[in-house]
Image (cartoon, rainbow, N blue to C red):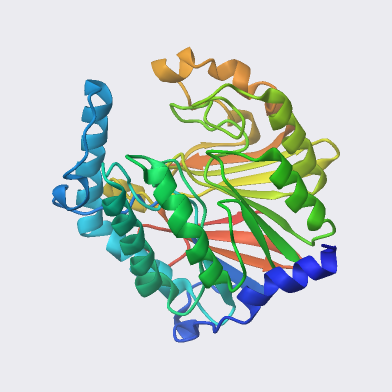
Length: 373
């Protein structure tokens, strides 16, 4: 397939979808220069209380992980009681006549159901909620996260259920958890971070050569994050053996495309602008896990290029070898900031640039604007 055929096919589903315009006049802090925009959510960990609704069949014989996961059920139930519905309501009000689709960065659901039928119900309930509260008639696009495939036969369930849903949303055939589509001359390459397929990633990059903006959409980060799991980045080796040559290969390929790497996973709002291999990668990490009331406002924990890698000071992170992970990338960092803020995001895209406005919590106004391009 040549580039013209690729763009024509994959753009058709998005371009032909009816757009939500009912809230256009109410959209806060509009960017009038944008050709189009995307409303985005980070991890959402959809769940409810009581925990038995989705977790009555959950069993974990490992005492440590059992306690940790059950604490997450309590966290999720509390935040989905009030805060997360308010966050989704605000996200829905960010859509306007220029919005092309709603993007969610994985960990759509908590998982841990213990039964594939319950896991399927959890996924379909989450998609229905996103369509009702945020998208309306707009396409909903989600990338697979680690929680989306966590639990008894959960991976098989996700792989069976979600590609047909993405096909229906985008109006084109999606057969895998990694796929690509275009909006005009911009390409969106959605990659399965859990089971990365290097040959498929390369093929999608090759087929979209010459795109104006290249967006890589992944649940996990490309560059090591500043949380307690710093090795959980693309080919970094958190759950399986690290593959540094493949990581280096895609850092180089993405840099030569001046890629914008959109991700979640860390429960942080993090902005990292990096130069190397004759190009540029901007990694923007989004978070919609409004776990504590104070995360509904934006406060930078660290800010400045020299601060990248300084936040991971916990014993767990230090044991993970944090300094040696960050060191190779630190010289290329040009801008950096990180915050615990959770909310919804509006990405405005044009030929002159890309910006991302964070609406922390359920704020009507932009809490922080990030100039991505």
